[in-house]
Image (cartoon, rainbow, N blue to C red; front, side):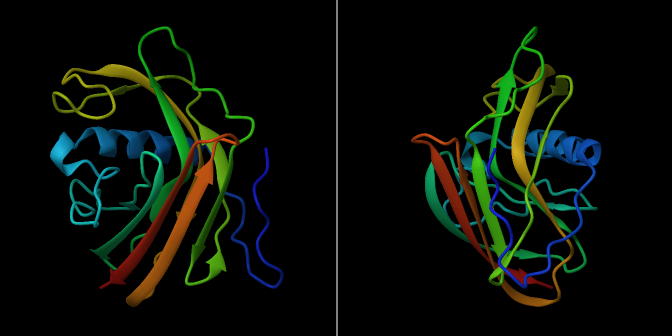
Length: 185
């Protein structure tokens, strides 16, 4: 698996604890499932739904279903950011944990400074309950889901405007990229 190294001279954060990232990844999938299709954060073209269903301790961001997207959002200063540069999930009983994508690569940067990505996935499927016709399970009752991805956990941003860009590929034809103009208040 190839994850680009930070630019020379750029400070890379210390490696993240994979179990903690796997727990955050499960929470991120549940966050996505908490949205009905019109407010789907992955399909959101402009960032108008970025603040929906956010937890109090972290701010989740979403990429796209393929291709590039540009969004703007306001987030509370003092909250870390968590997002996948590349991820996938599998739904259903007996599927077991989502396996790593061997050719996956990703990148992320905040205000031009590279952000470290860490591969992480759920060791076991976890229950996800969403609205009827949600984008993860499509059902309103708990369904086992597992996920894997290249994740970033960014420390809280200072108050003000910031540019965040991230994306990734499966190593084949599928790629995602998101650019956010963030106003941290």
